[in-house]
Length: 309
Image 1: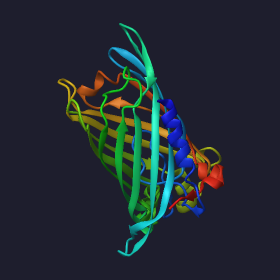
Image 2 (image 1 turned 180 degrees about the vertical axis):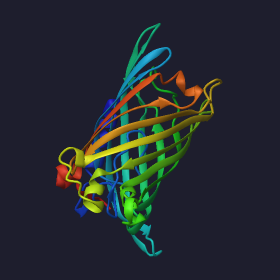
Image 3 (image 1 turned 90 degrees about the horizontal axis):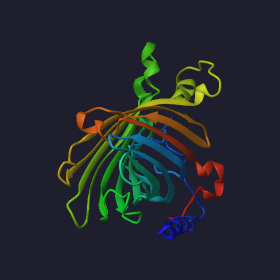
Image 4 (image 1 turned 60 degrees about the horizontal axis):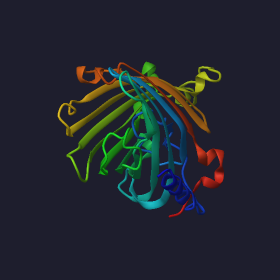
């Protein structure tokens, strides 16, 4: 089971050829952070080496350790630009999984690997002058992990829509210029199960972030030193719901996830906490801490900055 996941990573790595890809998460002058919960619309080469999460629920405590690999696999697909002319687009493939340990107040603990997730993603519209990008993805969830910790045991497949938008075009008048480092990014997806008990999941995330690097490089250099000039304060708003599922489990889960990230050319370090925003989310989220160590492998190891197509 684990061997299949490792084999998948090796197969993706073996596709490296000799065409250069693009910089990580950059549209126009804005470099977007890797969200801690939401998916990023920017195809890129990166390794989420560690994504630890600790959650205290009403009846148990859950610790998970996630990891994923994203690789740009095509840089020559048709893409629309702001003038309507076809240009080179980007396509990436992400493979991810996490190890989970559940410690209930009553009964035995359970641990194991969760479902295997795949997300092929195509950036089909990019407007660099507006710091704007739209992407389409197809989320695939395969129950290849431990039945004791998986949420459900049937393959899920469904579309995902993703976006990023920087505010750099606001202008340099007065205090307005200090709003230019703001950006939003987010996703919306619908992922039903393909068999077994009905399980139709819908999710949406939106991130509001403020780029200190953009402030110092494109608005006004405030003379901030390391590490302040590399910080991104942010807040995510996260929604997840089983539109159709087991009785008592179809209430929406709505949360706010404030955090702060440090990002340079090689790595992103991020930490956040999460708060329930509706009554149905309280039982499953008394307290949550989430972390992220993201490596930009195309800058750390330039030979990976290639695409097979």
